[in-house]
Length: 312
Image 1 (cartoon, rainbow, N blue to C red):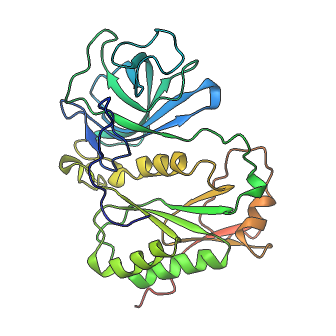
Image 2 (tube, rainbow, N blue to C red):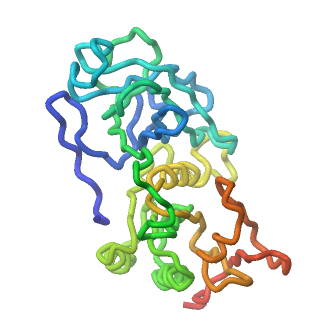
């Protein structure tokens, strides 16, 4: 685990990346960018691609799923000599405003082995072009012996807003330590620009295994906080929704619960003494729960927007 920017991945003999490259990759034309791809074995198998897509562009309709070597996947000739298969892709756009929408591509890979990598294409019959990005697929299929109640780590925290010129290290420490007191065990942050003053604090948490830092280097033309001019440029709030999508899939099956909050939001149980007891008290047949800031006395918890260190 490291807080440093990743180096470019090495390539397998097949020409596929051997590990994930945590940068935004540009599709030729500058209308689409891809950050990460995850294999999800639910509903028969899909590859989910975290993307930023120009709202006016026509999205690709197909994805090319890649395998290391043809002939070793058990498909008996269904693979081409390049070791890949073309499958349909479906784009899911987020309704938030902005020229570029935080989106997910869903590549249907039912009946296929787990792919190593994926790329997108406009035409089913077009050959792969060298400047089209190929993304390493991270396997997030459910482990065969997975039991949520036996996980070592119960609660992970995804920080929704990317660190942007954020230098208040006391507030970050406060945020982490309050949530650790409430039972959270690991924190995932997306670093847009950050600030050098934060490095010692972040480094200490990373070295202790308490924090993971994901570089969030948006392409230059997207470096816009789209509040106020969302219709003509940029992406909504530093692609916050894409970081949420990435964090959700990246940590799937790693924790029993994943909490999504900003650094000034604290979920405080009203009855239970910790977050885990609070979450266990909710009906377990739901995918998730959404809370609003406020002080409703009838609620089993409150979301407080505040900081103990406003004057620091």
